[in-house]
Image (cartoon, rainbow, N blue to C red; front, side, top):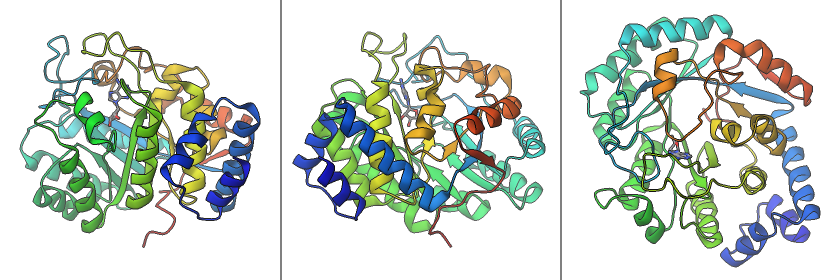
Length: 347
Ligand code: 5AD
């Protein structure tokens, strides 16, 4: 395994069987220690000890989709639905900018609202904060829609593929959604010129090690600029309410492996990690992640944007507690910087 890890660090793309064997060794302490050290080393070469921050604004929890894992699925009647106004979003940006954020991430369900809302918001942020990056995470749209947001001033787009295995995709999604379209959207986003992010959940129901190997091989082909993974966490109002949460150590192992396979990628230490463990965000950084996304949403929005149960929303993941977060990150040997943090090889 050690040889395989070294080969991967030298740009070798492993076979599916090799990946399966490697992932299955995540609970072997020596291998885990080795892969973490390797990932940390590679991360240091590319990003030194810098951690980039993104201000996350959860703009809407309306969603037309009914994904079996997600708490804001349209079939969940217990959700208090909200959509932030342009003024509320700009207020969040204003607070964030003062705190030092240079990237705003507008995330929402697949809200069927007209595009002018998004275009107007993006234009306003672009006008008010010309030095900031705007990231969108609003799900599957048409080429024309993606292009119109890009032309309005958006720079980046996050769209996790969720799982790259067709059979598994069909177990997580109703049949009006398709893996083919999801992948097509990711290709369109890259074509348009977005810095593009993808990723998947770790430990989602029915997931096998082979599925995870397929996810890593898909990412090796797609070469996204950003790769976000986080543990699956069950939500009580979904068909997956009774499924166990994803494994923390496996998620961390995969962050390290992704760092080795994508040395220059922007890899967030996600909120889901932190929901699983109080120190999850720090463990993610120590495993090779280099981005953290504090929550800039207004309090009411945070409370109602519940993709999974027990989502943290009042601790140091809140953007207003940035100073505390800075100290925590410093205590593990890293440093939050107020840069835009564009993708390494992006012009
Ligand atoms: N547990 C963990 N992550 C989830 N997401 C959605 N529902 C859950 C859940 N129950 C993730 C999906 C989505 C991202 C915004 O949140 O991967 O792409």
